[in-house]
Length: 393
Image 1: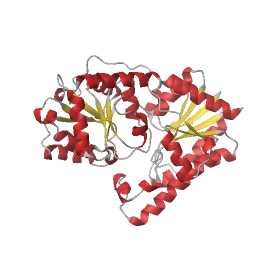
Image 2: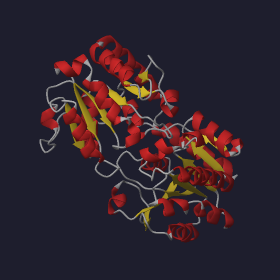
Image 3: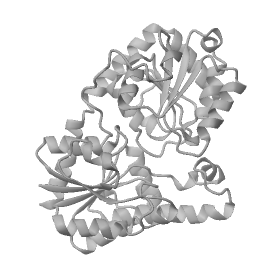
Image 4: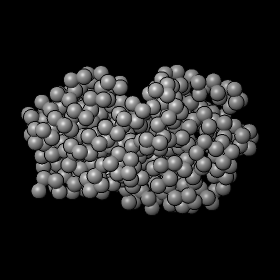
C-alpha cells in the first residue's frame, strides 16, 4: 500500500512524524509531502519530498502534481491552521481536498483543532493575536464553518482525536458523522531517559538538585501561562522555595516570552521560576524524567495535546484545565488532577496539594502508566492502516 502524507515533520514531537514512522515499520510505502526544511530529510523516513514553504500560495498545486507522479492509494492530509502560512494561505487549504477528489484520489484528513463557534469572540481573537474587532467575528466563524464542511465533504474519512471534537463537527458544522472517526493521539511506547544533561543547557543550573514542576509546549496566550505564574506565586511551596517552576518551549507570538519574564519579575519569582526557551528532545526528556509533575493550564482546548502525549509516555502526573479534550483525556484523581479553567485559586490549591502529597503523586503516576499501555504508536498506526484499507476496498 502506498500512502502520501501532506504534513510538516517538525518539531521532534510532531504527530505525523511518529505516525509515518510507525506505518513505515508496518511495511507501508509512506511518501511525505513536507515543507522545505532540510531537517525533514533526517527524520528516518525513506521518502520525503520538500514541496512547499509557508507563504507559498501555489502549495495546493505542488501537492497535486506530486500526487500525480506517485499515484498513492490514499492521500492523508494533516490540517492545522497556520501550517501553510498566514490567513490567506490558510484559506486556500480547502483547495487541496477539492483538487485531489476531482482527480479521483482517496483522501483521509486529520483535523487536529476544532473550534466551537460559540468560542469565537473578542477574547478568542485576542488570544490568537488577531485584530480585536467585532466586525471580524462573523467572518472568522464563516471561515471555520466552510473549512470544516469542505474537508468533511471532500474527504473519504476524517480523523479527530477525541469524541468532543467529533461531536462539535457534527453539531456545529453539519459534517456527516459516518465519515468521522476518533483515533486518539499516539504515545511513544518507550522513551529514553538521559542520565545526564550537557552543561551547555544554560538553564540547568537553575534546577539542578532541586524539585520542580514543569510546563512545556509552545508559549501562547491560550496556554494559560499568566494564570499559572500567578497561581504558583501564591503557593506555600513557592514562597518557601522548596519547589521551582520550569516553563519550557519557544514563543509562537512576538515578544510573548518577554512578557512572561516581566510577570515573573513583578511577582517576585525570579529565584523560583526558570524559563528555558526552545528545548531539544533530549532536554525535554530530561525535564520530564526529573520533574515532580506537569501543569498544562490551557484556557482553550480545541485539539489533542502533543505535550500531554509526552507526559503520558513518561508516566508523569499532570494538572490540566477542565476544558475540551483535556477533560476527556484526564480522569480527575485517577491519572491527574483537573483545575477550573482560569481560576487562579483553584490551580494554586491543586499545585500545592500535588507538590506535598507523595502518595498522591505515586497513585496518579500509576494511573498514567495504565493509560500509556493503551496508547502506543504501534496501536495507533494499526488503527489508521485499517481506515486506509476500508476506503480502498
